[in-house]
Structure formats: structure tokens, C-alpha cells
Amino acid sequence: MADYDVIIIGSGPGGYVTAIRASQLGLKTAIVEREHLGGICLNWGCIPTKALLRSAEIMHYADHFKDYGLKLDGTVKPDTKAVVDRSRGVSKRLNNGVGMLMKKNKIDVIWGEAKLTGKGKIKVGKPQKKAMEPQVAPPKNIKGEGEYSAKHIIIATGARPRALPGIEPDGEKIWTYFEAMVPKELPKSLLVMGSGAIGVEFASFYNAMGVDVTVVEVVDRIMPVEDAEISKIAQKQLERQGIKFRLKTKVTKVEKTGSGVKATLEAEGGKSETVEVERLISAVGVQSNTENLGLEDLGVKIDRGSIVTDGYGKTNVEGVYAIGDVAGPPMLAHKAEHEGVICVEKIAGVKGVHALDKSKIPGCTYCHPQVASVGLTEAKAKEAGYELRVGRFPFVANGKAIALGEDQGLIKTIFDGKTGQLLGAHMVGAEVTELIQGFVVAMGLETTEEELMHTVFPHPTLSEMMKESVLDAYGRMINA
Image (cartoon, rainbow, N blue to C red; front, side, top):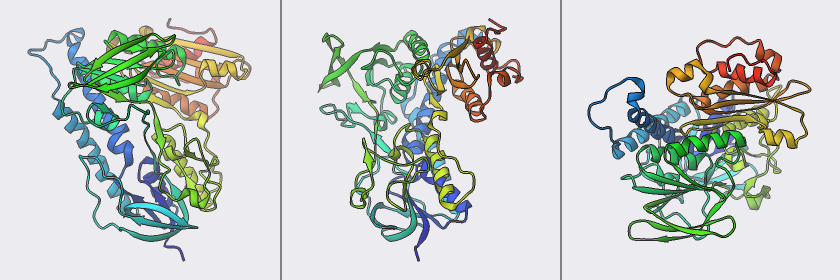
């Protein structure tokens, strides 16, 4: 008899959500964790960065108080320690919450580092990696080192920052997102390598806090995975706030100096320049944590650094599954959660479980202005051969946006001109990370343009722009 029906390795959003759903389905479940309940997302990623960005947002509004007819006596300045302490407090609160959820759902927590040793077997040893401070202590009444067995083992070990050769982070002058979240003091100048979600969010935060920020990106626009029109609007707004961008440029050399780093930037065509900054953030992507798990010995297939799975999280080895970042892109917490639920429901024999459809996974970037999207970009839709109808509606024509003082942005929708299928939705502007879910639901329900046009949106809201964008795709826009 196996010790458990399911053992999950890793307690990030994918892991702990999967564990809870497994328990709900009546499966005896355990979760193995080596550092923090809640994983990177809850402790060092999604949640604490949003707490930092909230402080930056308040700072932005304080700098523009006159725009809202307000008077402010004195000067608003960032208190670095207080900002960081608030962010860490948010993480600690949620970390403790995950511990309570494990107890509530009768899920055993095994503290240590797991390695697969055979069919349905793992060995948990002392963690090899020292957790970064500030660290939340392991929950009480947990299991520890030893050998355990399960009918099904789900790997949910996540990912870590990718490092470029010669520009390896040192935790002092060259940072990853770990160090960028807990600065002891704000640098005067900052160079960010990479303009994906992580790079742009940190650029936005530090810029709002008064830091001189430059972002380097190897392609011709920021946020390359987003629709080109949306990323250009976002770049323009970020530049107005003072962020400088070096596009079609790469960092070829970094030298540490007494006060920071000296970076050599090489633009397309060979032109180079040298910039000196106090700190550099490496935000060039992440890589899956597949090492030291015993995967090679079992013959688990790995491709381009990630575990290969089918639409239900199943690997090529019976009884072994993988979900989340370790199973490849898109490397997003909500993808990991949904993937985990699908995986364990399939294991439990739940009827009607659908394989993960990655085309309907939304992406969000929480800079100012926010960026959000789902589905195909206009360029990708054209490449796929669709005959398109594209609609756009600007924030400047929306009453709620004007009242909020947030009248810069755009909502863009892309339809199949033959069938009316919503192929993609792309947004830049205030609160679009909340608005995008409306289009995600619409795509999931296979809603047509006609049904969206006949949906009543409340007034005055930002969401009205969603309907107007749909109307524009069919030549029926009302308010612009």
C-alpha cells in the first residue's frame, strides 16, 4: 500500500491548489516543500511585487495631487524600509494562510527536498538551497526527511531567474527579482535587462520612486509577447514618466565599479555605448527547476529545459505528472493552478475534464499603465490566415476614465470576419488587468460578436470600452 494517493512536489500556486483539489476529491494527499509555502509567486513574485507597485501607484497619485483639485502640505517621499516591510508583510500573511489551508484540508506537509527514486517513490532529504531572508518559518506539526510513496507524483517545482553568461547576479550590484524586491535603499540609477512583464514592472516601480531607469531590450519593442500596437502605446506612456528605453540593443559586458556597474550596450548595427548605474536588474526570463529530482534516471522526457506533458499534465512515465512553470510556458501562476486542477481531476476520474487550452490563458503586466491580453495578437491572427475584423476604443473617449484622470489607453478586439469568433483581446490603461477577464469568459463560452454587442454593460464604467471596441470592429461604435 502506498503512503498516499498523491504527492505533490512544490507548494507554489500550482502545487497547493492541486493539493487542495486532490483532498476535496477524497485522495490522500501530501505536499513537499523545501523553502516557503506558497512558492515564488506568493513569497517573491506575483504578490509582493503587486504590493510594491501599489506603493508606487500611491506615489504617482501623490505627485499629481493638483490634477485632482487637492492641496498637499509638505513633500511625499518614499520610505524604502517601510515600503519593503509592507510588501514582506503581505507575503507573510498569505504564507500563513496557505499553512492553514493545508491543515484545513487535511493535507500532510513534508518539509525538505524531494527526489524520485523509483516508480511511485520519493526520498525527502535536507534542503540543499538556503532560503532567502526574510523567511517565513515552516508550519508546525509537519513531516520531515524520509522515504514516501504515492500512486501518483505531481512535480510542481516552478522556475528560477535565468542568468546570462558573464552577467551572473551577485545579489549586491547585479540583481534578480529577489534582490530587487528587498532593497535596503533606493539606488539613484538602474539598468533593467529585459522588457518582459518582470522587467517592465520593476522599471515602473523604481521610476515612480524617483530612480533614473533605463531598460534594454534586444528586439524592436517592449513587452514582445503583447500586440505590437499595445506595446507601443505602453512604451510611449512609460517614456512620458521618465523611463528610457534602448531597443534592438543588448548588454554585451558588465564590469563592477566601486559605486555600481559599468555596462556596455551594443545596438543593432554594431554601435556601442557605455552606461554607468548603481544597480542592474537581470530580467531576461526564467528557467524550469528540473534539476536534482531524479527525472533522468526515470526517463522523464525534458525538452528545452522543461518537462514534456500532455494536456492533462501527464509525462511519458506512468504515475509521474508535471504542472506549472516546470512544465513550460506560459509561465504564469494562474496557468499552474488551472493545470493542476485539470491534472488531479483526470487522476481522480472526474467526468468531462478538458485538456488545458493555452490559447485562452490571459497575461497581465502591472506597470503604470497596466497591460493585459488574451488570445491571438493581430499579427498572429493574420499569420494563421484569418480574415480579420479589428475594433479599437480609446480611454480618452470614456467618461469613467476621464473622471479617474486615467484617459490614456486603448482596448482592442480581434474577430474572425467569417464566423464572428473572438480571436484575441488586448488592452493598455487603468485597471485593464481586471477588465481582461470579461473577454476570457467570452472566449471560453465561444461568445460571438453579436452576443457581445447585445450585452448590457453598466454606466459609467471602464468596461463600457470593451463593448465599444466590439462595436468598432463592425462599424457600429457609438461614443467616438
